[in-house]
Length: 215
Image 1 (tube, rainbow, N blue to C red):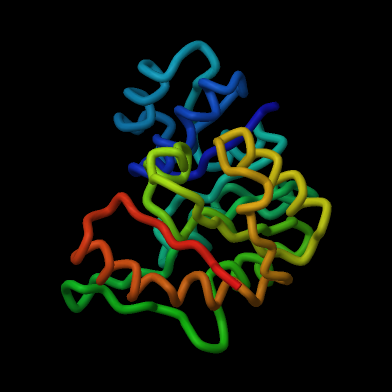
Image 2 (cartoon, one colour; image 1 turned 180 degrees about the vertical axis):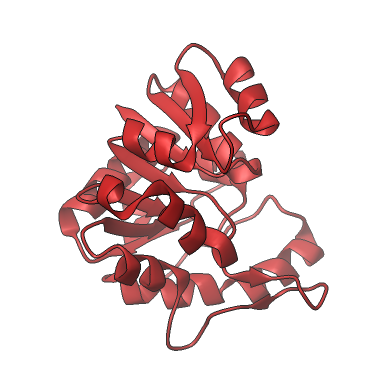
């Protein structure tokens, strides 16, 4: 599959590298076609990796990962182009972390909205699926690095899109029974608002952890 990764940070590079390893053709998008981080990633990730602008990447991919910081996601995806993203599945991995007042960060949007919902409203013809934003980058693509069973969450308005994203997560190593469908895109409020607790847990136990829902 041809997949776009929007964003050149740790999350984008980690997901992009995993996708290339799985045999996908991956284009990483950034503000500039000559972005050094994207160029270095493409040179090191393998023959299936390339890079370009946000618009270049979005045009190249059949499916898109938004790996930008949540506060700039709408701007980045706007540069990618509403028409270009129309009809495509977009996996939103972002979180609305606001570091403007220092650490720990606050959430720039919460309670009655989420970045996932903002993206879906701004791009109504795009099939937005929120996923992977509740674990760190290493766990996203290597869930077996955490001992035992633990859960990852998906939500979105399109069942077919969620099924496609779930298949990708299974290829990352997530067992199907540990992929929990939370319903429509409004559930992104909950997964994004988990981040303040996630940050405190990271401070207490380190970044390599996850949770399991027991009922």
